[in-house]
Image (cartoon, rainbow, N blue to C red):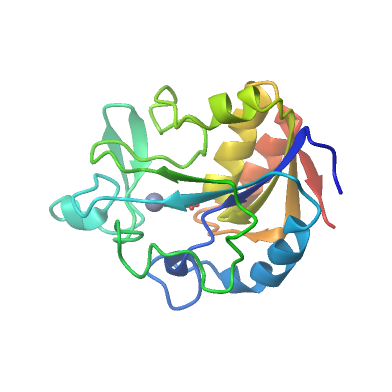
Length: 203
Ligand code: VGL
Ligand code: ZN
């Protein structure tokens, strides 16, 4: 069992990011058994859930004439426009049915404000609006985080980068993540994580 100062953060293992989902990540479902097993090592497990209202500004369908995967400028900066995904209460937003949820003490939902997307488990895409996760971990004396889940190059990378910025030690288990890889985003995310001091581990 790991020390009480460590937590496992399981990012967005939801149906819409798994094969057959609205924003499917290749092999997204293959990581579930490994994540389930890893939960037994940690005293603290946190799950996150991408959780968008139907009128969310990150959906291409909500911008006339916009194609999915194009980029637009929102008030807080560039934003990729995604297919409609993880709509609050939908089957696509549900956690993968085989993901263990009993060991989790906290589920953080993010991206619920219509005007702002939220990749990171800590801050929304304006990079300022907190989700509350930092306060939860701080007040429990947790200093080291292991990240797994979907997608490596978006929500996992943004979360791990924010963790390091906030002073946590951050490990990403590459074998328990899968990426979207949009226009080289996977290589870019890997380089950024290494530069920032995120530890990329294979097993
Ligand atoms: C994600 C794109 C849009 C993710 C969420 O979980 O990585 N990516 N919303
Ligand atoms: Zn999303």
